[in-house]
Image (cartoon, rainbow, N blue to C red; front, side, top):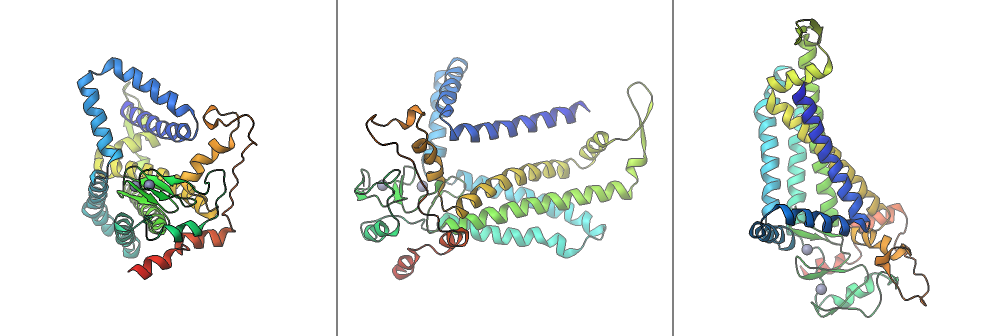
Length: 343
Ligand SMILES: [Zn+2]
Ligand SMILES: [Zn+2]
């Protein structure tokens, strides 16, 4: 019993941590939080270790590298191996429909295709040759993106909705974010692959969670486990309850229950992120614009400081053209013909 409570407590803590980081990253509390955290760490950890840690963090998050791509493939390989060697066999014995059991593999193929495309495709790198084309692609709102601004690193004029990616060291058209999991920027030309990658990944995690849950429930029903009794610490007979049942399954099928916990948590997190990405796509915003939007808009926020004489600058989304047009822009970006012509 204690073990299960501790495990659930641990999972809850991790989830709360992730949600807090997501909320704080949107507000200006993040800097204070980071500073406070760094101060605490500096007292506990020796300096040489701190330097090594910073170096590692810099390598992982501020340079292009394949660490997370590899980690992604290893985790996916482990989950699918467990599914193939244990769950698939057991479910076949229990006469589950084969279509139902093969669905995760179908989603895996789709996911790997879109994962590869997200990794290798050009997100819309701005060069001397296509600079003019991108400058005409979107209107300047003069709040978040103003005309005649230059990227000091690339020495190119900055088109509206573009941003310089410090990891890849290039300016990207309709920049969304730099994703470490695909080791590439997400921009106008590969946003569709990224969306489909996220969709298939969420679907494959959710399908696996459903199949594993149905398998365990079926197992409990068939073996009449829930009708059994057990003797507690005081020597009394007790009817098996849900907590005891979960713990019993954990001890009997540790790998399956652990995998189920992992894919269930993943489905929850990926599902949330997918909803956010779909919200941005349907309102024609990029993550970069959504993130910066609040700072331009919030007049009380010290980070959005402006000269007192200036008119209050309110950021408005001027690119939204209705749900279907917005989604269409993700799948058929206005400047895609340039990419085709070049090829
Ligand atoms: Zn640049
Ligand atoms: Zn990048």
